[in-house]
Amino acid sequence: MRNAFIDELVAAAECNDNIVLVVGDLGFGVVEPFATRFPNRFYNAGVAEQNMMGLAAGLASEGFHVFVYSIANFPTFRCAEQIRNDVDYHKLSVTVVAVGGGLAYGNLGYSHHAVQDYALMRVMPNMLIAAPGDPMEVRACMRYLINDPQPSYLRLGKAGEPCIHTEVPTVSPGKWLTIRDGKNLGNTYLTTGAPLELVNTILTRRDELKDWALNSMPLWSMKTKELQPPQIEHFAHVVTVEDHLMDAGFGSWLLEATATRPDLLVRIEINALDSKVCGMVGKQTTLNTEGGLVEGKLCS
Image (cartoon, rainbow, N blue to C red; front, side, top):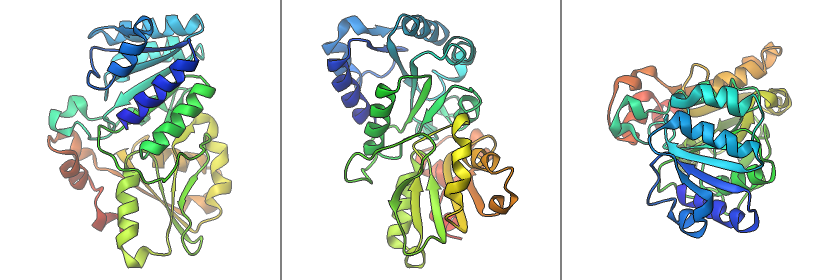
């Protein structure tokens, strides 16, 4: 995902002089193609995330579309006030890029567990969350954000994610992206972010799920809740999967979107990480399993 991100950013910057990349002394091994090609539009703000976000907001107020790149919780929780007051409130074109969503950096402990970031970012009224599930969705989200600059949060995996899509899809905020139709419209998984790979693998090898559909939602926000009930109506059972805590996560957001439709609420089943992972250290696969994102639980 990181490579797809930087490829799209460099390609866009070739055509748009207003694209800027700011890093918090992290990302090296990934960001060099941009830094080398556009040294006057690349800033290393150092280990000072609040200043980094203030710098980004200042640049955006002068007409730049600023991408702020760092690991997991550093460009979100450490500078939440600046995101809230400087970026979101003023509707500035700043894209906060967090690499290592979920438990991708699980071996570094709780400080690097990005399992509450949706909760923080989705309560910003002007913030668009971009949570791609594979490198093709990264490219799709980047193209959307570059064409429609706004306060946004791009949540990436760490590295090595396979392509589920064969080509770059077209994405739109709040719209479900169909990956697998299924043989009927009775049941569907609905993912956001990295769990797309896990669910796609499960559907590929479990015969009892051969009729299930698979949809992802790479773009969502507070403003797109009203689009959800008409899409849920097509299915009798919608199973959400996310690498985030249930509280204030993606599944909870979907429930909020259907709060006035009790007939639809009963169709939604949420699969999210158990909060016990907050006290654990280990590989992403191990922690996901401990947290409940495992084939046996998702198929039950």
